[in-house]
Image (cartoon, rainbow, N blue to C red):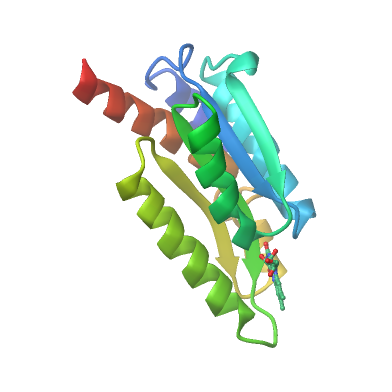
Length: 161
Ligand code: RBF
């Protein structure tokens, strides 16, 4: 999605001014996760979210997103959490274990918890594929995660009103 398309989409987004967001980002591949984080925060602010309603936490690696998101949901009053990580396939089976573990557990938190947990995990064969999904070549995933969070909070609130 180009920046232009994203800004146009903002006008049709739900009002985010009262929404509270938690972002948990992995430090592994921080040159990628920091950009995803910046994109997500910029997109939230561009859509009307207030800076004081955004909590940012970091965990060492993507595997720790599980505990990080679970604890943030328990100990804060955020309306949605965005889990941000980048797992790049290496020479060992770790890639599969980490991806499966994080994916299954974040899915479980979505069904067992009270708030949506947005799946912001890039799982790529190599660094190039990850960069392409950040720099606009194949998407600007950080912005997409932010918009997904806003839409899911709106969805959740629409059922409670
Ligand atoms: N964490 C990531 O966020 N991305 C990775 O690509 C990644 N690769 C890893 C590869 C190996 C061989 C190991 C042992 C860990 C890796 N981690 C990675 C870290 C992992 O998510 C976690 O922080 C550690 O395993 C400690 O629980």
